[in-house]
Length: 77
Ligand code: FES
Image (cartoon, rainbow, N blue to C red; front, side, top):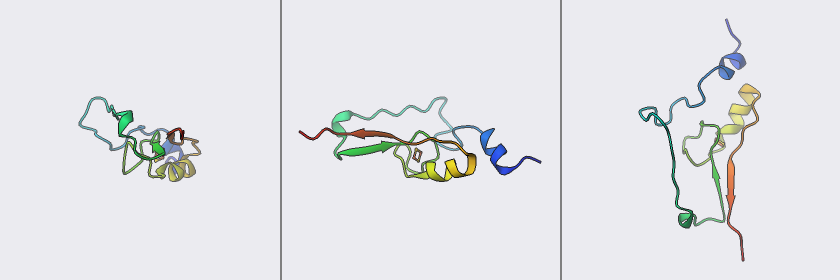
């Protein structure tokens, strides 16, 4: 019997996103960024992947991990 935290640590990174693909690659045209800030998921738990939905908070609590999103900020001129 392994504690829940230990099981989480040993699991796959990608649990369910595009599992039919041999490699998940997302390409976003920088010109399409309409918001001043966009957060992209790096924990592979977001229900809106590749956009962060803050699922990393629960993942970090369960595992003791420290992952967070990649935040792209548009410079204001
Ligand atoms: Fe994955 Fe935020 S939901 S980094």
